[in-house]
Image 1 (tube, rainbow over the protein chains, first blue to last red):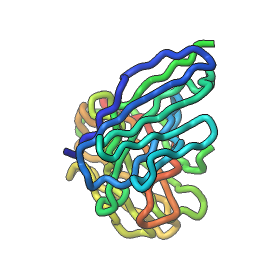
Image 2 (image 1 turned 180 degrees about the vertical axis):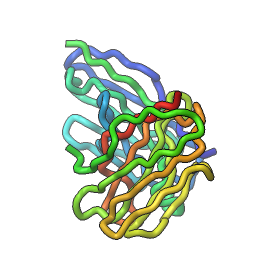
Image 3 (image 1 turned 45 degrees about the vertical axis):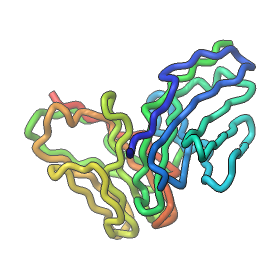
Image 4 (image 1 turned 60 degrees about the horizontal axis):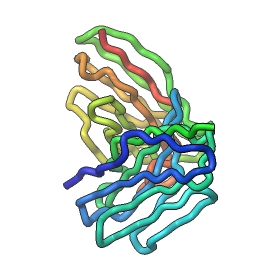
Amino acid sequence: QQQVKQSPQSLIVQKGGISIINCAYENTAFDYFPWYQQFPGKGPALLIAIRPDVSEKKEGRFTISFNKSAKQFSLHIMDSQPGDSATYFCAASDSSNTGKLIFGQGTTLQVKP
Amino acid sequence: DSGVTQTPKHLITATGQRVTLRCSPRSGDLSVYWYQQSLDQGLQFLIQYYNGEERAKGNILERFSAQQFPDLHSELNLSSLELGDSALYFCASSVDRDGQPQHFGDGTRLSIL
């Protein structure tokens, strides 16, 4: 019940296209859903996050869509660029387990020029 | 640059040994989190400290321990090392006690021979 399942494992998108990464969870106590971006040799960097009181959050070319009833959330990268090529992790946590983020397994995104 | 500094970047040692990983949080951040990243387990939360006190505990083995010092830097001690402890160890920091890790360091790669 603590798992966060992420798909796909890898993704290849053409420059200018839309990249979509999906995550699903089971624990209904989760109330914080961040996405992290990780480049090779670097630590994860917080990209965007959402709480379940909203269904969508947009920051620049990055959008989180959240479906509470389906217990799913997704990251959309619009106008994908080669510089977006990285590994993306979704995560989830609940307020009673501060700091205990449960991470998905990651998606390696390659944006072809 | 996340502002979180981890040393050393790489560490190679043998089974049964003990090592200490060091982390300096971003200036002004009071919370420090430790995460382990391995190919089979992904990113796993180990422990969080806030202003010198243990705040939350995750999947941290009894052979592992951590502390946060008055100057807010943190150390993760790993003892009786096993081959399976080979992984990337990340430190992250945030301002809040009850927040989530925002700024990750670039990690320490630990290799057990």
